[in-house]
Length: 57
Image 1 (tube, rainbow, N blue to C red):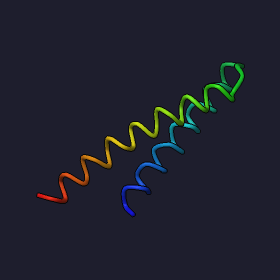
Image 2 (cartoon, rainbow, N blue to C red):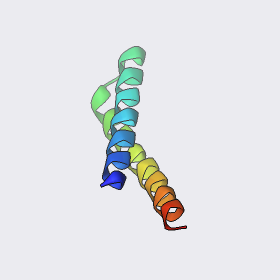
Image 3 (cartoon, helix red, strand yellow):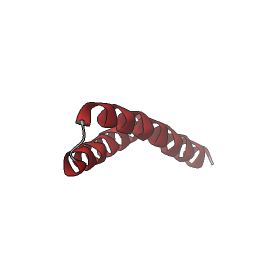
């Protein structure tokens, strides 16, 4: 369950950062938010894998 929380949090955070950037730059937010969410999910997966490996040791 902890892994899902990590992935969801990273996805939400990067999506919000992408949205904030799009609004500040005056660009269309939808593509940047989708890209930010994708990148965030990859980051979250990486962090969750590291946490899982550390817990096994």
